[in-house]
Image (spheres, one colour):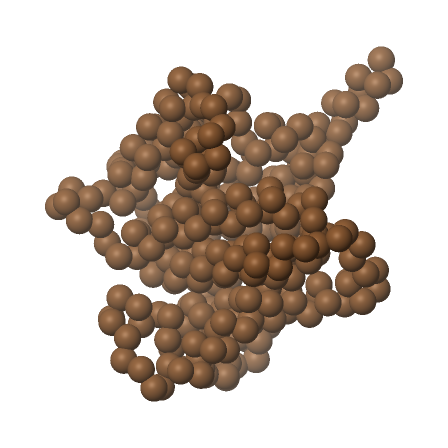
Amino acid sequence: MRDTLARIHARDAGILFMLASALLSAVNGATAKMLGEEMSALEIVFWRNLAGMAMILVALRHTPATLPGGRPALLILRGLLGFSAMILFFYTITTIPLGEAITLNKTSPLFVTMLAWLLLGEGISLWGLLALALGFLGVVFVTQPWGLSVSPAYALGLLGGFLAACAYATIKRLRHLYDARMIVLSFTATGTLVPLLLFGIASHIQPPSSLDFLFPLFVWPQRVESWGLLLFLAMTATLSQWLLTRAYTQGRAGIVGVVSYANIPFAVGFGVALGDPLPDFWVWSGIALIVGAGVLLKKV
């Protein structure tokens, strides 16, 4: 009886941790959207990762990593994929409604399943195929390519979800070789150094208009409020990740993974409060299909 109560308590704690993580994830997106009114997505990524890198380095100095390593190329690839996914995510946050940007980012489980099936030879059931079909139908409803074209911002948001899935796939190969902090460090260090390189060459090239967001001129934040928002962005992102980790260690992965989709309605609410239009019928339908597909994948 005591063991049963303990399991129930752990499950409930996992759900609460994930709800808190989902709320902070939406808050983080709303903060990025506010910052996007005065600085580029690349600057937001730079400051976000600079703060994260500093925190990881402090943690590693206090408690050094012990795992053997040995795959630096794969570690660098994980950093590049993670940075690419993040810059596309923050770009879509600053250009399309917040709820829709986060929904497109939530397609990553669909791409993880598809990559595992097509490239890694992992089996997939009929329910898994149904989930993929529903999820990508949801993408069609969110992006609404009725004129047989998709807005570049939506296409880049979907690409961000795909690259996030690729980054997750590399973690599966790295987790037994590198301390989790080293894997995160590869991401934050890349997300700090690559923006510095792009800032450095921005004034010397003329990129296509569709890639302007990758080559902005660096501008120091001018307002105290902006520095406060950047600090808040780093704190909420770090706390959200910590709560997410606690959720998966406390509760069942399938249950807390489903609860993670709560960040979509949270994001829609924050987005509307910041001036986004209310989603129309097609967008709501697309969100429902993508969430449903994600839930179904947790069950197969």
